[in-house]
Amino acid sequence: MPEVYNWQLGRKMAYVYEEAHPQKQFAAVFNINRCIGCQTCTGTCKATWTFSKGQEAMWWNNVESKPYGGFPQHWDVKILQKLDEAHQAAGKKAEWDTAQTGEAEPYGVYNGMTITEAATPEQQALGYLPPDSEWRAPNFYEDTSTGYKGDNLGISTEGASLPEHQTWFFYLQRLCNHCTYPACAAACPRKAIYKRPEDGIVLIDQARCRGYRKCVEQCPYKKTMYRGTTRTSEKCVACYPRVEGNDPLSDGVPMETRCMAVCPGKIRMNGLVDIAEDGSWAEAPNHPLYHMIKVEKVALPLYPQFGTEPNIYYIPPRWAPRAYLRQMFGPGVDEAIARYVAPSRELLAVLQLFRTTQKMIFRYEIEEGPLVLETEVNGQPWQMYDDTVIGFDAQDREVARLSVVEPIHERPVERLNSI
Ligand code: SF4
Ligand code: SF4
Ligand code: SF4
Image (spheres, rainbow, N blue to C red):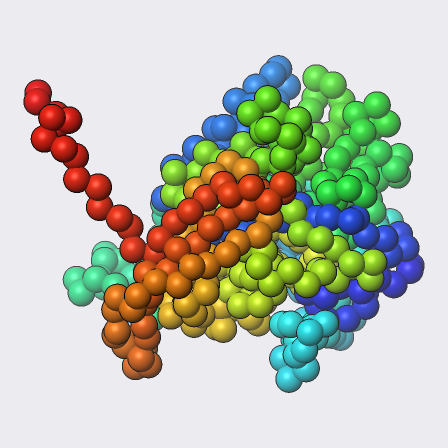
């Protein structure tokens, strides 16, 4: 197999195709700390793309309650188990070397095997085909927390407090990661799955697909789904007409996708980042996604050890056990949570930009404001400034302007509600 460079693993890895990169990459940051589990994103994707016959159990976007929930059921436990068995059989350990960190290996070096490296001779990537029963609902175990261990009834009389809750759950928002090295494309014997050179969106050519379900088997995130009525597989299309700026609402500039734009919890920010020829992210310090992912490292990839280099990034939930989060988001978890809990002046301003516009933001500026709070966070001094952050679209037009301190608007007396 050819070798490609995976920056999330800090090393080269085996992949079915030669290294090739798009000019831009579709990416997003999800702030798990803010998700209210309302499933507006899930319903909106369904109402837009998967409302037809044969798509009843198809949820391109789903939000699941961790640790117990999953769509399909137990998808991550099952693939983690398979990966673990492959390591045991090979006498290897799925460990990270965090002593080696740098520009090209921001989380250290992963010394274990990825799903393409651990594949059986019949597969391009390690995987399994879930039975129909596991696809029957998008959020099994909704809102189910772990039990409190100190009491027979599993209830704590003292409540929970940070830094780690003893009884916990969190919402995990999921859609196709439009991976840099997609396992679905590697698996497809018909070469029906392709990654677009202009924006890195991964699509299935419905005319070429014959429904062999190799992609369903080998996507580790289980984000391609089989449709019995057409006998083809389908997946999230990244709302590409919006990303292209062809939606009637878009003014000709890229817009965020439907599931991103509707989020009432304001947890999602979607954009396009520039990719250099070698596959690294071109430096763009004033791009909000670049700032959060590359500069502050506050948002992390989901199961980077799978090796597909996923492009949806998560700000980890600060109350969940760190060992669980490190398995899910890699070794950058502790630093990411520390930076989120006591954000830098710039990060605090950038975090205000979530869900302020449906247009994709390509650049931001910050106008400095006064110091409004001096306090301590985790025993360290921390200051808050009322800065103003301004977001610009692809044509460099201002599309968002927000201050850190939410302004209060008083209604004039003649506009008061008189009912
Ligand atoms: S998440 Fe799965 S379906 Fe999406 S690009 Fe990656 S491997 Fe393919
Ligand atoms: S990006 Fe579009 S197609 Fe993909 S999950 Fe979101 S709404 Fe659905
Ligand atoms: S719409 Fe937003 S807040 Fe609601 S479940 Fe989806 S990601 Fe969470």
